[in-house]
Length: 237
Image (cartoon, rainbow, N blue to C red):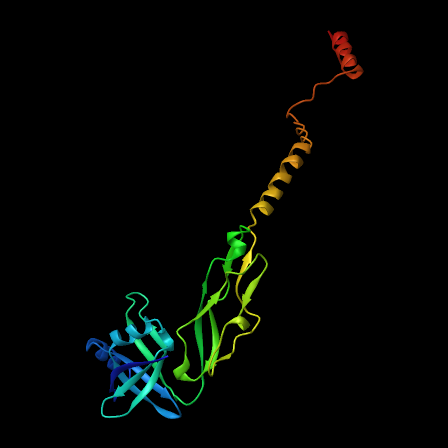
């Protein structure tokens, strides 16, 4: 979506890590502007203005004006950014020139509204599967988001990407069969059943016999062989 926002950019004549550090110390960040069949330009922009756009409702789909000092003013979008993994500060941004007369491909968030009958009446659960769909449209017609009503959903029913209402130049790029949300039954009873089946099986199981213990040392002799030995001892005496 196009916004009446203008960000001032200064051209950077040199590149490299040292130049990037100097740019950040001056309170700006390095950025690159490219696209629309024009040569890329290295610029410096205010990171607070870029973050403000990224965190707005339209986020990366925001089209704003980039005014390059002593040069062009062109509509652009933020297509990528580099963030410090420790400090969380913005380090670099990629800006793409936008031709307002040509269709572009964007990802638009999808929100659900209403309480499904499958949840309210049947005691089911609403599962949101897809939170954004990809569309193609003219830059000035990019929506902030889509709203899908799930009130009529019963258990086993779903809303798909093909049911999202599109208008103007919008064309669905995502698969029409992509599930946005569906109502499902709770699985508590299905989980309890196997647990109950384990108890009878455990009760009916035979108690394993105790292992035979073999004692070390001489075996105790019993029977006729032992009696003969006792007689021999008597004769020797």
